[in-house]
Length: 348
Image (cartoon, rainbow, N blue to C red):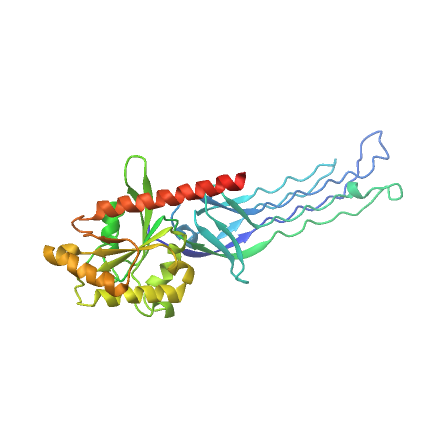
């Protein structure tokens, strides 16, 4: 299924059922009095996060979601049945916005998390509720209130531990194919990747992490050029960015210029994302003579004034990939342990 990360839907909660005007009429009970029951409440619409979906594509074909209307009340003090709620399953990582106002309604991150997006109408009141010592035969009942109706915009942000960042054809898709079972298209031309890909990287039998590959970022992306900026928001949930640089590009473009342009576009688009931990991954070392790899890589590192971890790999042959994957897993484990310690302190 093609990845779809935005969709618009309409949600309509059920109206409340109307109250009933009724009077008890039975043999030998001439003064039975009012017995009109209340209506039922209208059903509400909830969005519920699930791990069994990874795209919003289904909402292209099922864009309207309605909850049941509450039933009307009836005589003999019978209350109408409340309408059934409408539960709409969405992928984990779905942001919900009001299409008309742009207001952020909620963010569904974890399995089973729910969000009320349209409240059902309140039930109408039957005439039995209006009786009093001075009004023993009320002929008044109220109607149920309408349920909420909203137009929502859903935006999916991939939930991944590690995000791959780089120019087109830097080797991001080749890397995710090498370390996971994801099979994005790989070809020797720019913009092969047109939509994000997720892959689970298994380090050993007990440890793994999720890696996200997005379309390449090019110069001018912050101003709307190319595809990469459109998907950069998917990297906002990641804990670590791997900046992939092709050290032997087929178009002879300078690796230094390529790396600098990506960093500049990242900083122009979102400073928070630019401040995330980012490691440099120098790819395609297999294309250089073995005795020239260190010299070329060290020159690039010096030109970039890079002081974060650096890895020299070949996504095609697998050279250096295992060492990088293990380092990433160790880093993520440290972050996880720190989070756990922080939660323990908060609980105390």
